[in-house]
Image 1 (tube, rainbow, N blue to C red):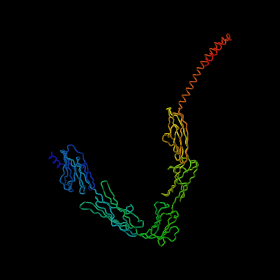
Image 2 (tube, rainbow, N blue to C red):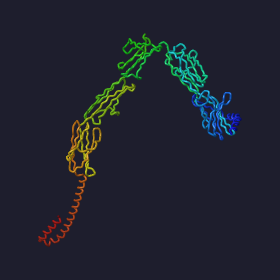
Image 3 (cartoon, rainbow, N blue to C red):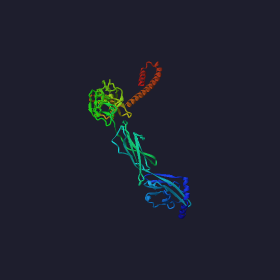
Image 4 (cartoon, one colour):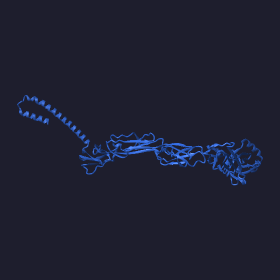
Length: 561
């Protein structure tokens, strides 16, 4: 079978070439130094005996590099020096080549061999290497106006394929212009590695507009996913030309100046090299103060607002600017810790003074509220009051004053009682008001010690409540006292031993007894009337019989009883 496959391989080259015509060429791209993956490019056919990989030389000869038996599931590699130790072949006949080199750019062919046919699928390998980051070498210290200046040489090394260099000024492409922009480029290829290096020099005629201009170069090269561009670091040059204008700038921590800031006035001549000394004219200084290009003002005050000027030492080219020092003051009356009595009045005012119109905001315990007015102070008026204002246009200019108000009052105590449903206990409730918080203690004449109470609950600012449960076996008087540093108040409460339910039962018993007594009296009266009617018939006949009359009276008394 192996012999027939080998003979079939030799006689089917023309057949394989015809098959390739229908499928066309595939491309496998890889980055220099990484692993190349070359899929076989066709489905595994039925009856497959083995698969082989080869590449084609420039003269058309084939070099076999790897094979895999489909029957024995084993693979082997041919002795090709440049691929020794670099190959791997997967079960789906994908060929892997580690450490991609430029020399790996070849046409590889996957061959799937059956008993009666050979299927070939060619793939072209493309290797890419990114260029090194470009550098601008041989940069001058400055550029002069009126002549061509060599800006530098942009160099990028070791790319494949070769790249192209473009020069930029402030992000815009520099195109060659006679006498203004001159660009010369060269390319080199390393014979051993096959990698390319590119170099481009730039000559440029500078103008005053090139002050702080940013020059860069970028190299563009190809990679598997398309074109890539890498940019050099910025190159910024001094531009030499004579001074034609003086300007003055204000350097401050923010866009606006506030009292207490440190600012610097900067006088700048647009020539280069720039002037090193200037005359500065603060408000009220007509002769000028000699100094360097920087004039510092430390801890600036509001009276320093005004026009500032500077000039060259010959007093030519004067520049000026206006400095406005913003300020903000705030006065709160009263402020700090304030203690007042409940019911008293308190007048508060918060007045701002600023370089611009401002308004104030009041807060109590960090919540916004209207302007407070205290005509009759209550405990709930206690708290931390804050008066706050700021200049919206000036970052960081904000003032705040605080008033911590404490409203005090003598203790006020109230007692109440209620019978509980168990018929045995009574609940005594006290409510106490005052500040500082009064200490409440309760006793009874039936108990020598203090009565236990529940934990106090806060009803409102300065008002608290608690309950006491007692089981009196006899009538008692509960005495409660509330005391703070301002005074003391005592209240008494009489508590009956009988429950309100016992009184109800007694009333019901009395009512029932009265009803029964009325019923008995009614029955006796009926009997009496009946007997009186019978006796009256004999009165006329025995009117003189006093003995019987007495007996009749006795019977009447008995009936009444």
